[in-house]
Amino acid sequence: MAVGNSRRNHSLRYLTTIIKDAEPSALYFFAAVYLNDIIVEWYDSHTEVLEPRTAWVRKAVSPYNWRIKNQYLLLLQRNSMNVMKQIMLLTNQTEGVHTYQTMEGCELTDTNTTFVFYRTAFDRADFMHINTDTMNWTTEMPEAERIVQYRNANKTLTQWFVKGLRTLCDELRFLLPFANQTLQRKDKPNVRITERKLLNDSVTLYCHAYGFYPRCVEMKWLKNGAETQVKLEAEAILPNPDGTYQAAVSLNVKSNTRDDYACLVWHRSLEEDETVHW
Image 1 (cartoon, one colour):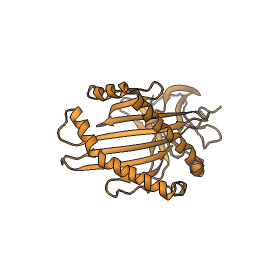
Image 2: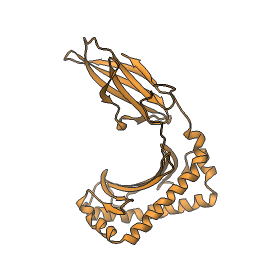
Image 3: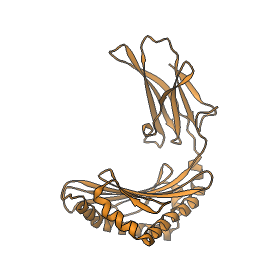
Image 4: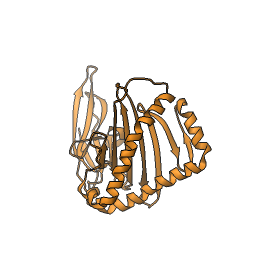
């Protein structure tokens, strides 16, 4: 029986980043759109042009809607200096390099239910996000409390904001048929075990899986055929330049052990779990 879950969710994410350089007037703005883990659109303040990153997305979006999206991103870019100034004022920052990021989107489950999300970060720390079920804004930063209180007091504005987020679910459903061939692609992982001897008469075993797509993979170590507590963490799955992924999970054992150790890998491209023995 497979160790993985065959369920497959789909997501559409819009990410924007504002980078303020040490120069007071220097600012860099860029935006990226992802369908699942595939970047489909890109915009930055150097070119001020929305660029397709897949062949199918340019066919899916009409020239008129493409121009509208480009104009909207240009407005966001021009407003980004004011946004950064406000955030720096709230956080008592007057100089230096700083970043402000937003992520919004929609996730569609295999049961056809959807949920939307919106969160922000300042200098890579959570700044503010909304619970779209309760319509409440929350923050982990005391400096953002004033904004959160204002938005929570204005329920009409929050409802309007969430309604706008939900249009991303319509966009996701519209794009999925165009992306189907890309999303259905399956590349099998190449799995191997390497070892590194330590000074204390022990060995670190590394189970490597590389070249697989889609991203979802499960890896765990077995000892004498039984599962150990050592499993792959989601953040250990890393992208490759060719659009595939790699991952590794390690285990420390005694160099003179007589136990049988093996790495078990589950991936959608495999007909059955792959087991590689040390």
